[in-house]
Length: 225
DNA sequence: ACCCAGGTGGCCC
DNA sequence: GGGCCACATGGG
Image (cartoon, rainbow, N blue to C red):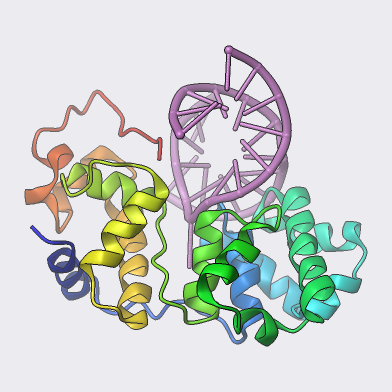
């Protein structure tokens, strides 16, 4: 069973996901940071509040006092650390790229990724999400669901982030739209079918999944990534 | 009253 | 390099 075949099954089952919902690149970046270990619903509230206060630009985040930013994004959870992370990113952007996202995104891809990863609070998944969804770079996003789902399907043995990322990138067409859609579909699958064992019964990948086939209902799904 | 969410960094060994 | 842990609100 191939990585690309699973993509087609998921696309057929769920349809297009229209990720990433946002009006600007900076909104995508902000969302990527705020959604760390947090449901998108909560992030939407925080983004809406940022818009209401007209703070959804690099300059506005750069200038806003930290306590004020914390208050606005509070609904997204982990609000103190996330406010600090948003500040870290815009500080980095102004110190190195005149606060201009276009200057940042015009970097060579491997340098761009290193630059993003150098910001405290931007890890691998967030960096790749920014690369792919904000800057249209060919960088596959691996999340917790990706590793859970594809190890259960027996399609990956290695669970290191970079290894898994490479498996997807070497088995898919070099197409940004497919990368975007695939990650979104994996999240949709995960949200619907991988949180509680009984839900496995209705999963479109049930036949291929070790857990769905012979699950032990007394045991919980490993929540480790 | 639990459990979980579109992770990350700081410790520790 | 990996195993724990804190971070925190809103929804099931």
